[in-house]
Length: 487
Image 1 (cartoon, helix red, strand yellow):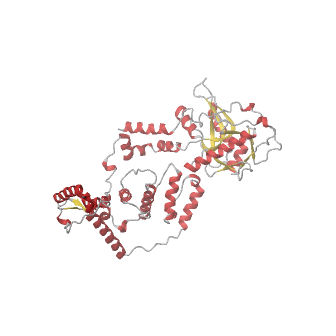
Image 2 (image 1 turned 180 degrees about the vertical axis):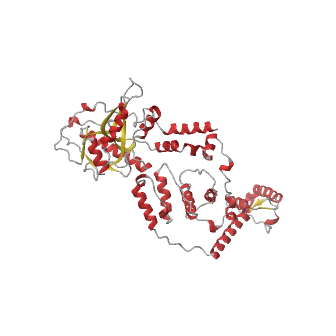
Image 3 (image 1 turned 135 degrees about the vertical axis):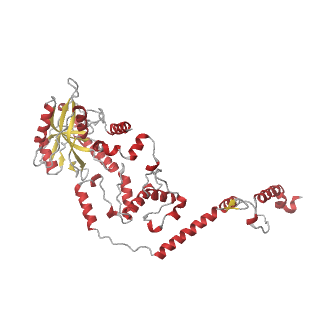
């Protein structure tokens, strides 16, 4: 069984990480539509200003003085030999806060920056993930001797591109997220060559970028590889690698978890699922004093909430608009009331925002700590914790015992009404609900006086006899409608 679990976890890891040529983090081939190489200032100068000083870099765009150099951008055109690209002469020199890219065609440069800004913003708004990075350093390596050279970026700093208006230049701004070693390259080197890249320094002011690259150069030179001090801006996505690293770091803990064991074996044991609550019995089993709902919930939603409260693992499915986020918000409020913690995760940032908004409207926002998107940094987390610490929570007046009893009485009356409505009555063998439904269908049927009949003594046989008489009467009803003119 352990071999099967190990095999399943390894398969999950394989699906999480792409080490093929499609991964630009390993096989970096710059595309003209989504990559720009920075030639000025030097990578060390750009690194110091951007990472250490945390100051933005302004993109220098030459003036459009040569229309022949302005070629439209092609999304699938590879840069190739960038040295052969024509360069237009700028009217002025570069300022200290500006960067000059190797691409000098004005329209192409503007188009690439616009494309990078649009795609990175769209991905961040949808998933809360930064995919736009400044890449510092390129490792040129080979899988085996005499094979093709592979170029991979080394350090990645999350950035964002923005400008105040269409007339202002594009600016590259640092984010609150930290610079990281290329995670895909780290996994590839560790798996294939048993090489671990040097850990990043805690303080970049003590160790410069050049000093850090020297450590990598010493490792690379042993295998005949090279390190180039280049600086690129491009789109790199590796958010799933965090899950891969968790599976590696906590392998033993994960493989012994009962839910993971059930998933790997393909069957769910009853002791891991518990019993789902019966919606029809909730009013009798749930005391209003123990319910802390902040939003409306129907019987199916309440059954899910009570099932989760009892520690049962469940999956809630449903199309959009069926109340899933509403149910999640109620579950969180129940756990807050019982002093428990909840970790709510979602691939889509919109789902996180929806649940948080519902809790905020229920005055539970100070219990929530948002650790996604731009809020997933130390500064924001400390501010949120400090705000919660300073929050003065004033307990509200709860319902009195008399009000709780009144609520129970109302629930009992409603349940008794529903019970009576659906109770099958003898001797007829039908419920009042069924009879009222049949009567609603006969609204357009002419009324025929039938005298005094006690409904409690009607039997199925009496009903059948009445229906036969009605059919016979229907054949003669023309006489009634025509009256004296029938003859």
